[in-house]
Length: 161
Image 1 (cartoon, rainbow, N blue to C red):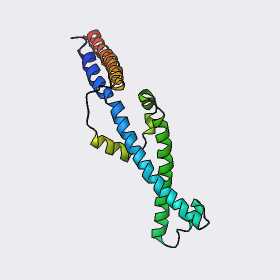
Image 2: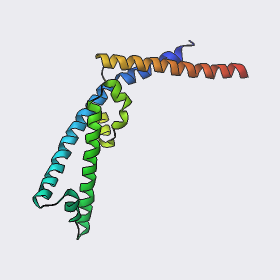
Image 3: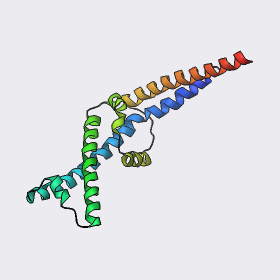
Image 4: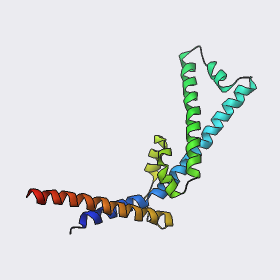
């Protein structure tokens, strides 16, 4: 019974961590789709600006004269910044294996994409080596963490009793 918290922690964290490779793969697929769409918008804008002999910044500066145009310029600037950020994140994630994606999980920066990925995500039994590796890593971490915490809690109670 003394190891029960460790076993519970091992199972809970093992099962949770086993889903990480699949979740990140699905996020990466959505990220790739978002980058593709943002690339189209960015390239079309840049092409239209170049046709008029303008840089992107100069073309955006022409969006003046009304509140609507100024808001639209801000929206476009945000779209271009998002395209740049997500493109960089995609490169990092595409060039990483599962452990690399864990190390670089901070490149999963788009909260909308994370939310949509999570909504569509269906947990599954991990049958890939990556899923099993993450299950083992989570299990060991969960066992060590929960068993260690329970030992501290029970030791303190025994000393005070």
